[in-house]
Length: 235
Length: 294
Image 1: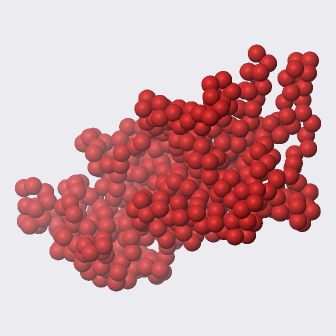
Image 2 (image 1 turned 120 degrees about the vertical axis):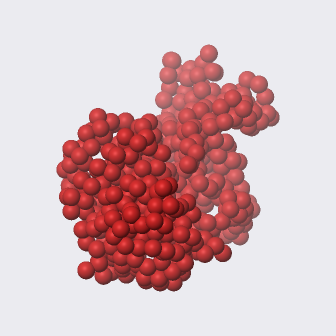
Image 3 (image 1 turned 90 degrees about the horizontal axis):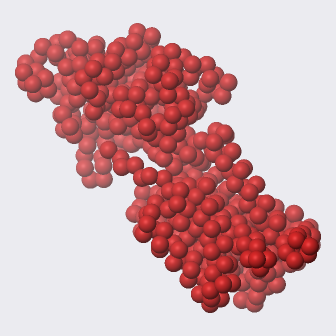
């Protein structure tokens, strides 16, 4: 049974038709990735699911609930979290305060325990607990962004370009974290420009081009698909 | 020496009023990224309400203050909902013009309701003056209450934004509305609460201001409003401690300038200081560094 089902959505920025009838689904327990070049509509799709943007037409359901009618600040409570492009952590707050914000919709009594869990998973963040988030390194900021999203205990974690701007060693670390979270039972929807890495950890993938899904299938198959290799893997 | 101390006290007291008004400017700017030029006129409305409460409804001063705060709180929320919220996606120029229009609307509504005659504001603060240095330095009761009010408000707001859930949500929204929404924060509610707090503070400032300068007219709020805006920019707009520091410094500079240099040019000093500070430090004294979004 699919946890997230997107059916024929159309999204516009003013007159610009950014998403042209995209449909896909994410089943409970999967890692699904959306790959594609800059401007293909990957981030727009995630932002629309999270409610930051509204589709003009089409339907979206999460766990059977209508997402189109759900305001952005209510989608978290449904059990999904978006770790947005560019991290968008609260730069002027401390690491701990950022995590508290991530648990904003949960009862205050549960927050300290969850923060401790995050510190166990991300020991670097514990060392930086009282530090202002804007002073963290890029890799630490990305870990904080993921930890912040996990603070709401989401069933579906959406990650938008988590490897952006990071050194290769840190990219590997981030992907390790993603597979660990997946092993812990979280369903993952991953948007990446690093198609090689994304396809290597994903179960299934959709290839986006100028607002349309042009190809989809098992991640393994796409990894060995000639067109995909030429267009996105550089060989 | 004694006269300098006495001028300093007057400056601190006037500066405290500016600081309380500046807090409203700076909080609203921080969260809605707009300059609410109608803020000064909310002060005037607050003063009129407490005037009416004492004069016509015979309420005690404390209740008159509460009435003024209640009316201004509602007024602040209504102004935001009706005038500013529909323009959330509009250019900042459109919002600015709307705020100026709202300012005139409030002034002219006051003119319509209360007329153009100057009202003599009742003495709402019955605290005895303190006499120091063998009776040579006398500090008025109003000055003491004003400075204390300013300190209490500053501490309360600092605790509110650093400790409470709503306070943290306000900081989150002021930094990144979209990210705050993704956390599950109701951005509209948070903005409403900010306007409510700012307007309630404006009511307090109105009462304090009119107690010190008891002539109340529909334009009473505009000059203090502009000066408090200057104070907010001076201290670093968006920063709560900045508004405090900016307001107090501005009050002291104004009073000392009027006392020792020129009575007529007193207001000019205020703006001259602003220009100098902005030339040297464009973000204001305690202004936040502006982060470029990638």
